[in-house]
Amino acid sequence: MQEFKITYFYDEEHYIRRFIHTDSMESAEKLVQKERDQYISFTDSRGIYHELHTGKVRVVQVAEYHREDKK
Image (cartoon, rainbow, N blue to C red; front, top):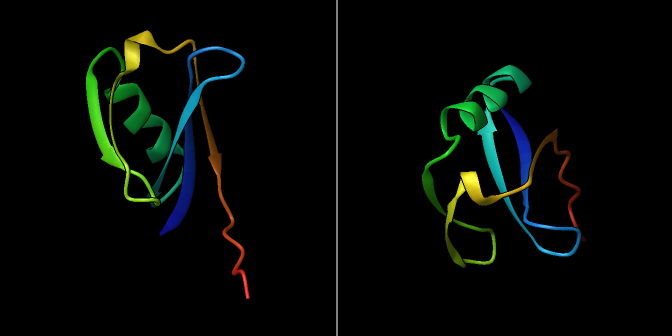
């Protein structure tokens, strides 16, 4: 499994970010496309619950993420 970062931008200053684990960039893109124009919910890595309507965001960005261990 790979980790992907999905960022939902409302404007230049406001965004919500979530991380998913899936097999490929293509499957991450399909997930974003499947969720288009509907409400989604998730809990982020800080334990904060989010609900958002994907039709209300201006830009959705998907990128592979390589987490670095902080030691």
